[in-house]
Length: 116
Image (cartoon, rainbow, N blue to C red):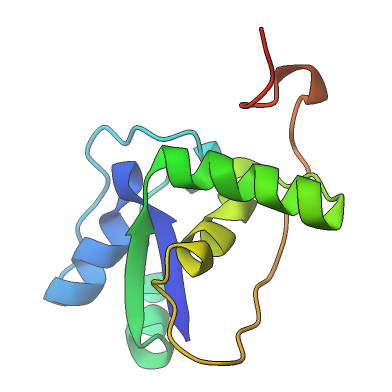
């Protein structure tokens, strides 16, 4: 299993790689559902069940949101598009990959690729 998170809120990746809990320090990302810090309990679960934690930037997240809309006709919030962005960026190994799409908490009048 590979976990993904925004580059601007990468506490899980830093914590996973060091083995020490690193709380968020001024996270900045469009994926507002991923702004909170990992807990010690969650880090233990991640370290036991995840092979790697990868990161994607906000432009990749927006592109993934648009890809899901154009191809699947599903609206997903930025946080829910993070794993798709990781997959599209080639950060997830394997020939058969499952992605959980979640979150429809998006203001349709303010989609990140639409004109203001």
